[in-house]
Image (cartoon, rainbow over all chains, first blue to last red; front, top):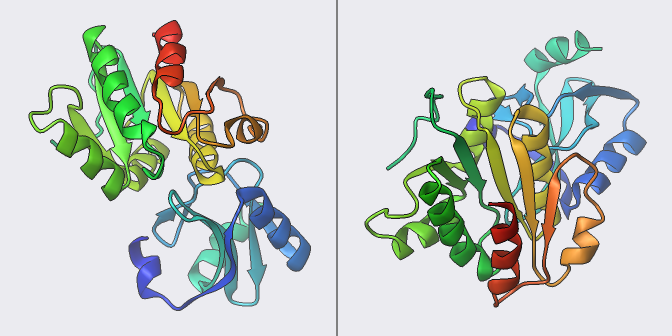
Length: 90
Length: 155
C-alpha cells in the first residue's frame, strides 16, 4: 500500500464491490473528483473501472481501494497536499 | 526472476494478470497459459499477489513456463507511468476485485484484453463487465479443462 500504510486512515466501507464503493462516495460526499484508473494518490496507483470517483471532505480524501483477495474498501485519509492536485483535475 | 517491466522491441509481449489464488484452477491454467504463450514465441510476464506468484513459482521451480514475474501493484504502477506495456493481457477474475483489476488494465494499457472469468459465479460475474474485452467464461473451480478449451480457441 506504499506510504498509505504509514498514515492514519479510516475504513468507511469494507469488502464491497467497486460499484458499491463508487455509489457510496457519490451519495455521501458533496465534493467529488473523477480521476483516471491508475491515478497516483498517496503513492498508490488506484484500481478501478471508470468513473473512478474521489470524495473531498475538509482536509480528507475518500477513495476506493481494491485488494485482489479482499475486495474493495472505501478509505478516508487526511491528505491536504493531494487536494489541490485533485481539484485542478476538474 | 523478477521483471523490470521495461519494454523491449521485437517479440510480442503478453501479460498474465493473476487474481486471488483461492480458486484452484487459476494456478494450473496460469502455468498452461504461460507455456502456450512462450511456445508461440511471446515474451511473457506473470503479475500477481505474493501468494499467487508463490503458488505458481513453486509448481515451476526451474521457470520453464513462468519466466518473468512481477508484483501486481508494481505492474499497474509501471503501466500507469508508461514504463511498461504489453500487446496482450490475460486477466484472471473470479471476483469483483479481479474484474476491477482487469478493467484498470483495459483503461491504462494498449494491450488486447482477454478476461478469464471463472469460479462458481462466473456467469453472473461476467455480466458485470462494463469495459471492452474478450470474455472467456467458464464455471470452473476444480476442473481446469473448460478454461483450457476456451484458451486453446484464442491462442
